[in-house]
Image (cartoon, rainbow, N blue to C red; front, side, top):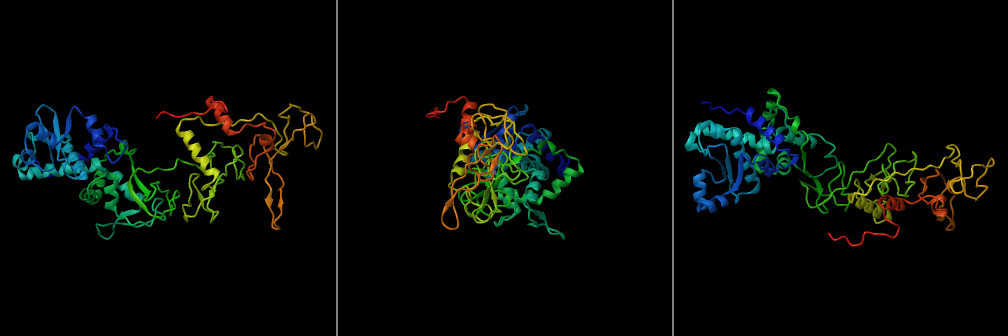
Length: 465
């Protein structure tokens, strides 16, 4: 009779169960595993056992041989996993995973017993079975590969010179500018929703389990897609922290906490191109910009949300406070911030992406149109600035607002030249003559309504949900 634990098998079985149950995030949903293997086992509370058998909790614990939980084998290939619902949730999760381990490791069949107890199989053998089930549980709830990946992402490594401790040894993309103190066990406990004792065991046995991966060439790749629901969030407003942020870009607070996604929120993804411009535009979705453009030519939205204190600090388009210094952003409490939020609602509601095409041909050297977009005249004299037929400007210039000069007097700056399809100037954000003055170009709002089949005066009214 084998008394030495075989830790290779429980690790391999745990990985297989995760793969077969299509688990896609941590903390692991044990109900998802039960649903996948419902023909093999059911999960029930001690309260249900007490009700069915008309017993007290003390009698229930005595019959099952444990105050935490037990798996009962019916002798015909089916099991019931019982758990004590009065125990702390994290402890209960490990108990259930532990008992599931006995099932998948075939411990009941191996020894022909319906309930595993030390009295039933002997103290030494029972110790082996318990160690193997513990190994299964920790690799089901917090697999070694994923635990190591979590610690690596936070710059936590095992101590050198024979030390068993784990400590932060380097800055990473996640921990950069993060002043909160945290430890390996804290991250594991939160990310995998296990007890403090289970988190410590996971960290203590991490190296040993990783060595099993390598020694027996275990295939963890089928579980590599599983992602963490835990992240760093603002302690006040619940916004997920951007890597490298010192301050919350929503409320400006500096304190972040590591937790499973609370009732907070996170900003949608927002890309930036090589020219440090939002791409696409966070309001209208336009992706075509000049390299030096500061504003979207379709809707006039600035292509960066800079800090009002330091223009080199560029922030997410939804940010109201600078991630680096906590000062207000350019977008805060402006029409731009409102329009970005409105655009997000369109995205959530499933409005189609906008594609802005223009058939207006022009000379890229002079920005002059080859054909008047209003009357279609193609004949222009050399040096012409206006159409000889209808008087339309042949170059789409902006209409700048008057600005106050150093002497206190207002003056109108010289207009900038723009491409024929520009509704707004890419240099100063002012509307163009083709858009505002002549109405040749449609605004993105009108284009969006046409694409969605709504008229200019139609709205959604009250939504009944």
